[in-house]
Image (tube, rainbow over all chains, first blue to last red; front, side, top):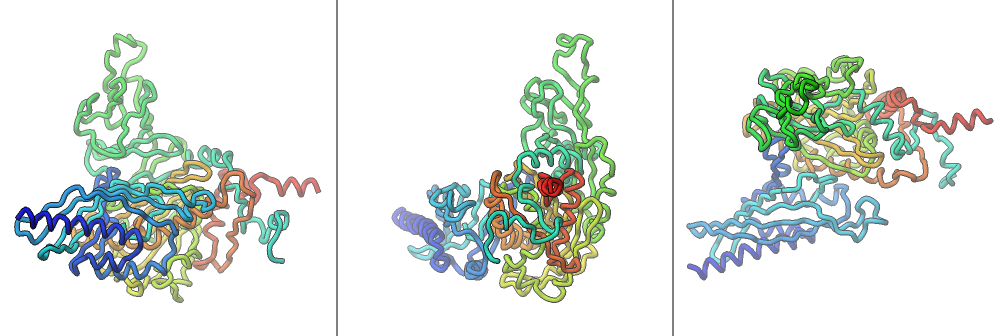
Amino acid sequence: MNAMKAVITAAVTDIVYRSCLYLDNGNWGDFLDLCDDSMIYSIKAYSVEIRRDMEYLSHNKKELGTLTEMLPKLNSDHSPLRRHASVYTVDIGEDGETATAVTSLAVYQNMHDGINSHIDSGETRLFLVGKYLDKFKISGESALLIEREVRLDTRRLDKGTHHLI
Amino acid sequence: MSAKNHKQWKIPAFEQGDYVDSRIYSDQNIFDEEQDKIFKQVWIPVCHESELPEAYDFRTTSIAKEPIIVVRGKDNEVRAFLNVCPHRGMRIERRTAGSFSDGQPSGNPKHMTCMFHAWQFDMKGNCVDIPRAKEGYQDRLTKENVGLRRLRCEVRFGGFVWVTLNDKVEQDLEAWADGAFECIRSAIDTEPLEVFHYHKAIIDSNYKLWHDTNSEFYHDYMHYHNRVTGFNDEYFARTNKGFKNGHVNVNSFTVQYGEFELGESREDLSFPGFPPNQWYMIDLFPGMNFNLRGSALRCDIVTPLGPNKVMIEFRGLGLKSDSQKDRKTRIEHHNSIWGPFGRNLHEDLLGITGQGASMQTGSEPRRILHGRHENNLIHDEIGMRHFYDEWSKWMGRNPSDPMDEQNKVLAAE
């Protein structure tokens, strides 16, 4: 059992890190391939100002596909987001068919246009910090994301972004 | 003639009034004047009453660098005070929101307490305790002699809390708005509203550039979402209407939400008495915006931080009576367009960021145009012109010639 647990833990950890690389590089299709068809993605934060939990974005897998396909039609800045993630915990359900993971997340923005590209390009700024709260479906030695909640600590998001976090 | 040198570029393409001098967005003296002559004089919405739903709840904010606290008393009245202790000038409450129901390390429950020396105040701003007052002040000062600085405060127009620093403000809030809210009045005042969304942005740009963006729809070309859901005959027939005191509203049309790949009709969640999928916009001088779009109300409040820096607070509101399911849908509708990860807001903020970068303090003065005249229709830039007519009255400056240079040249000639 411990050996199996180690295998599943490794599979879950691998998916979290691969998801970061795919999202960093805008490989949306590869990211969605890590997700089960039942996947639900959300970005949430707690506001101390209005003392409420807030949901900034919420989509299922199909909607995520539509959203990412739409990106070329939308104006945005050209400064890519880069993730630094550390998988803190992986917990496997008693039935061995599900798992959860908590990942600490910092997202940086590598400035291209920024505010004044002549000055800003090449600089890296902290964009946000938070956590990935992930749930997985386990099948044998493999795992697929069924839920990702991006839980933000940062609430001052300034210009925001069209991209997934 | 195509490209121009500086002198040629400065020749007005239009009459004065159809452009402004870019220094109104970048000059430190003009910014300082605006704080005193405008922001300290007029009504500003600072929060929504649903942010302090219970007695002893509070919310802190600021106008023109003056710290403000809004509290709800046990009589359910919402009151506003300077968030400043009359003893040593300490900020009394440092949190953004919370409740005084529970005690603090320096203070008793149900009181505002300055943590520094434990002077305590009730929810009406009365000072109720000064530690060892008799020993220190004898009969020269008692708690009856001091209290918080109260501010004029009204709860109105959908439950927003409005404050003015001006004790002698000439118009009450209803008169100040001059009917600009009437187009959505029944929709937002029939039943209580509730805030479900809040976020803020601090942008290196002038606050008026944000209000300009909210005042003109010509920039809808930037938004794929608005092009596919909006650009039709009904959209181009929308009109701008000016009101006294620099306010403007824009009438509605039926938004074709279903034309957007991830869109859906807002019909089932319309505000009370509000026709399905409509979109009204109200721009209030000197920089507040109210957007009722189908199923959600958005409110922007600007806090100018410098000639080239502004904080914008974004709120989303639904009906307090919403079921959990309806609220979730309403939030999705709001944030899909106006959240920090939504389709439109990010693009709007990129727009004023780019303007801010090109109009930094000390940059070459240039003409910023708002000269589209289309019989007040949707892409007519009358909203901005109306705003700057009002700005000119408060500031005693011509926005097209804020340093009075053209007049001096004419006088010399």
